[in-house]
Amino acid sequence: MNKIASKRIILREHSEKDFLGNYQNWLLDSEVMEHTDTSINKTSPQELRAYVDNELSKGNIFLAVEDKDTSQHIGNLKIYNITIEDGIKIAEYSRFIGEKSFWGQGYGKELGLLALDFCFNKLDIDVVKAGCRFDNKKAIISNLKIGFNITGVKEYEADNKIDTAYSLIFSLNKDTYKQSLT
Image 1 (cartoon, one colour):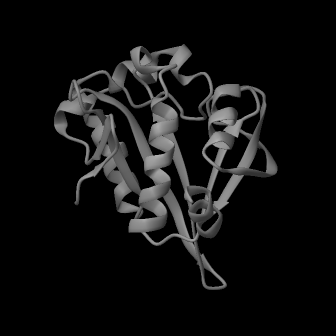
Image 2 (cartoon, rainbow, N blue to C red):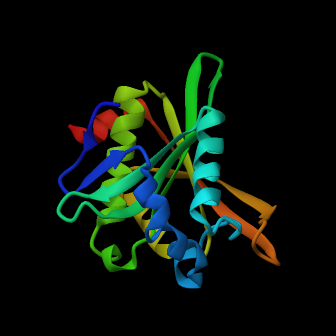
């Protein structure tokens, strides 16, 4: 895999060190997991490795986010549900900064922009979609800042929540993205 990097972060394949590190702690931290729909049932290094391997076996892209300065695994990026509809290549993405000491410093936005560049320029995706819960104000603002438009609302039963969940659906196409760079 070619190096995918921005000013402060690198996207790379997961290493065994990631599964022995703070990744487990993120999944067990209610503050970190508050706005996610991920079930917290992957707590051992073997379960985390199996989860990532399963995502990769489905044809998804699942990368670790590493801080350049510290070489620390600080989050993940998943690009999934890659389909072609009427000749248009569409994918969904999910970005996650799990390391709380990196929150509030613009890493989520930087990851979002790096992910969009990767999707549009390396994977030749035409439309990228994302979703986030109504109560995740920071993600909503970040998605809008990096160019996404709100295109819908989704109501669903989340695996790890007891109530019905509501998410905003965001979309950005390659042409709009490229125009925003000029």
